Image 1 (cartoon, rainbow, N blue to C red):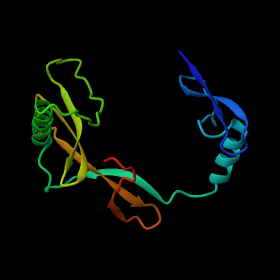
Image 2: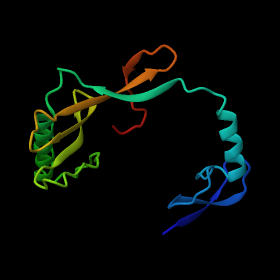
Image 3: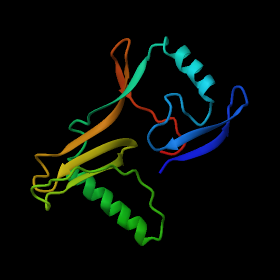
Length: 155
């Protein structure tokens, strides 16, 4: 099913329809600018090189293994639920083992010492398949990396 929404271009003010989901949307389709203004913006920004990118790197030895982080996160969530608190958290899509359905891929996000990390492991061999990564900002000019800082108000 495809949905179209009516919007007003933030630049030229014309009313236009954009497609928030579904296939077949035009290349310059977006909720803020009509197709004409969006095409001009895309063309203008095409000559501006990217300066930084978000990369995920190994968290290192200061972080525990993924099964430990997962267990701590489940304890934290269950404590919040038992106190009647609303639990909001990031979720991630796991992989599936089609040959061995009992082998589950546990994937999630957690905060450790104010640092967001992403963890993943397979339940049949949790320590050997443990992966914990953290987001870093890579300067594409110098190659330097620094911790990624989320600019959103909620973290």
